[in-house]
Image 1: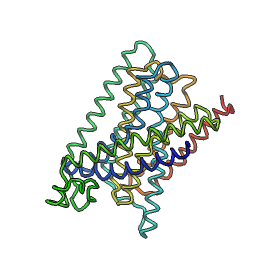
Image 2: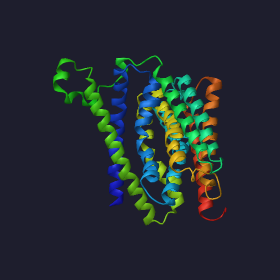
Image 3: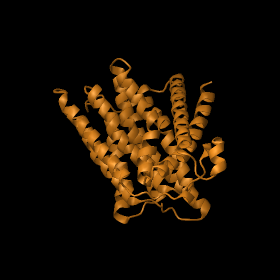
Image 4: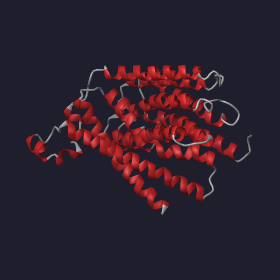
Length: 350
């Protein structure tokens, strides 16, 4: 039964991701937003909902120390998965499409947009992780950090929304829900009304959230049935499931040749995940946002995220080009962390 739920949830997320990428592009065009705002802000925040809800629910609505620890693990796991596995999957998609079309793997990305995202990620996540080394008391020290992180994200969003729009009508696929609006479709079969665009985006997000919820639930049941360690589940397996929307969105946009949107969806989600969910932990679970014995493995994921990001984006900044093969290094860093977790869980390394 869990396998069937897993398959159905996977399909639901995939359908939701396809509807979302199509709808959010039209939403951005209706508001005359730049690609960076569409991919790095709107798409990133929308598809970050499934993995963001897990730590918020665990910290705010569940009870007990274990719930807070699960929340902290989920917050740390999201940027790690985006910086490693999501990059790897996108790189594989780029190489596959390039081979099929007989082209090279140079990605047609706005490197300024990606560099902008990664600068904010590096600064915000360094501040967030640095807060884990602050003393538990007085607690207001971490609250100050939370305010700083909110300000950083607000300034980041402001920068994207002030950029010049660069999405032409011919770049957009027809809105999937446009045919449902028969009167408007008969008047103009090309441009949908904003209300229909909004309806498609909301419906897509609903499918993504519901699909992710059942997918994670099925993964947890299977892990329990097969006796998989809870630490391995919290730090590695569950984040893979909750990051599916970003991976699907990026693959869809890679297939369409929209590389800035594909990468911005990931890098924008990294900025979001390093700030807003972290604020929840700093304010409501400050005692658990501490780098100490017992949490070193979880916080080590942050170091892996920084290293993977550096190996991918520093060469891009120097050469002014991003290649699909360069994203594959994320898979190596993911395997390195997976090995660390397995070694610790198995008791080989205390």
